[in-house]
Image 1 (spheres, helix red, strand yellow):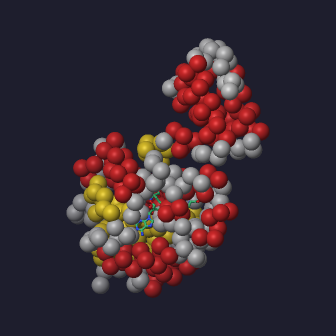
Image 2: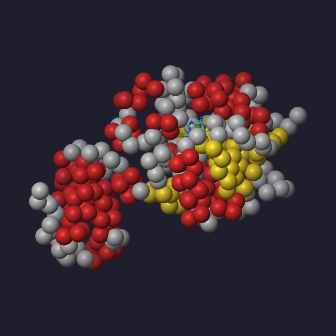
Length: 293
Ligand code: SAM
Ligand code: GLN
């Protein structure tokens, strides 16, 4: 099959790709086209501008065509590149990891707010339950230079990816990774426990966008019949493992904040602030404290 990009200049290939993505109704066609051509050619934005008139080599045209086919088939740009930025840090992805979402940065923000209100005289201990790529844990370790942390997951592949990310980010000396269900293998006590668990009701998964339903791992999404299976399991476990004064911060799906607070209260935790909203105004990060006896 002939390659639509061969013989074209960088600029005309970029425009052709953007038009192709736009006609497939992809929302971020211009941006995606720029990122995909940059990745296929190994050029940043400046490189693309400076070399705009240069023709693509055969190898470049072929790589770009493969990227285009994958995007047109619904694969997210982050999966094609194999990496995604979270909290300004680069995270490598694998099949077993969710693509970290900007919404989840709300969990990091709230955890830092709560942490910085307290005076802790020892190096803080953090647990991230269902760590995936390690996004939340490694963002927190990056921000709190004397903290130690552990991430859990039931996927060994995800744990390997998280460990690689810790190494790349220079955080491996302060991060451990443990295969277990939720927090079951952890002892604590922890000053902070964070989690973005799977929370989509099983029946809603087929209604999600193709980028999510086909390319994010089901294990990372499926929250059981009503979406709350993971919260019911992990909130009592977290409560038992928090230090007095410690906090649990979890991500909530849209409309789930109230029920999560009820589960937290039932596990003996105290709500001392409202949920933190994400950029779309959705209550996204829910926190509760373990009060000292
Ligand atoms: N924390 C990452 C983030 O925010 O990008 C990943 C979140 S993803 C929504 C949920 C993660 O929980 C997945 O990595 C999944 O493998 C993991 N998971 C699912 N069931 C689990 C269980 N029973 N125990 C521990 N982790 C689990
Ligand atoms: N935020 C993901 C989505 O929008 C879901 C991740 C999760 O279940 N925690 O699909």
